[in-house]
Length: 143
Image (cartoon, rainbow, N blue to C red; front, side, top):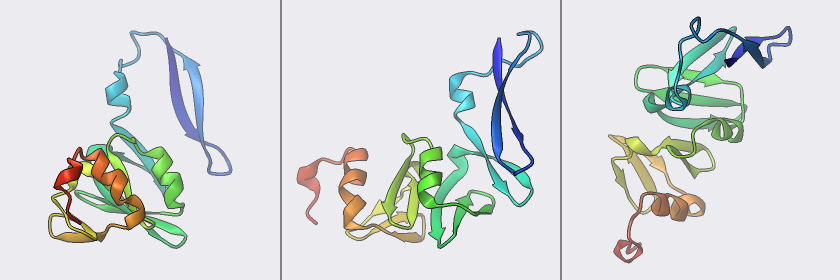
């Protein structure tokens, strides 16, 4: 069985390395299990998080703030790089500075998306894609 493992090289770059292992020595993970979590590098650590717990990401100049159910991370990255890393079936860009987990949306207004009591801006550029994604019938939208 071929297994992909990761390690960090001297330049702090995350590498994916293929190694040969015996099936009895490795826990078999399904594709769904492998795609249910990821790791963010913060400082000198790799922190595991589950995509289902990630609420939204906010771009803040050279950094991306990641907000989960329990804690927050600060990454030195571009929002577009984080967007590429996230599963596209659960995450949607709603603004130049925001990506959200669509499972946490509680309300959408003309210019905003709500996650419980948190109001996030919804730009015209991304509104149609979000509405299409949520399977809202077009004739019900009167904005």
